Length: 201
Image (cartoon, rainbow, N blue to C red; front, side, top):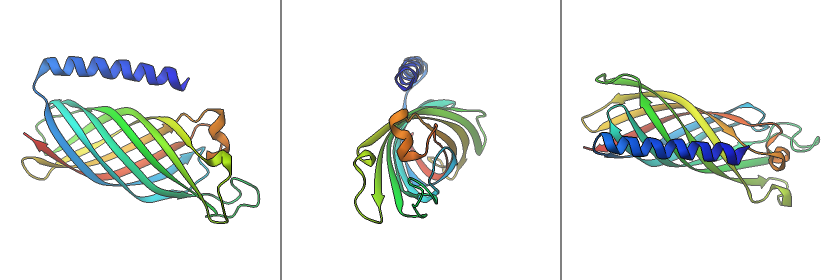
């Protein structure tokens, strides 16, 4: 299921790039900022309040573009009773490093505040820490794909600089081997950020 979803997304992304290049010149954008992440389903960890995100975007025209980024989430602490019945809150922590690519579509142009929708694909490395000792072997080397979707708005600060407020839902395609470490089912994480974007116009 995860591999099929990844192939479909990459095909759509390739079509998007090919079409966009034919429309107009590409404008380069670099960005960086902070995010906060919250568990909203099937994820037995709490909140990662301050995370770092940086990337490079390629705008094909005023309406749409491609995004690429690195996203580092400093740590979610486990909830009471996970991963074992006698685990206390904070015994385990998981840090996430993601490499992502996606696309966005601005809904309205010519405004100082521009709403948009977006979606894309991440590949995430999970790093577990155990406050009581070493991490069990089955908690090591966990890597999983993720599909994200959402939106937000961009606010013009200057001619070449925008403030981006993204709001995304991240759906991690854990498979059977990731349920024990993350909490069962398909984890959903809500991410809200504040990102500065600079465009080389």
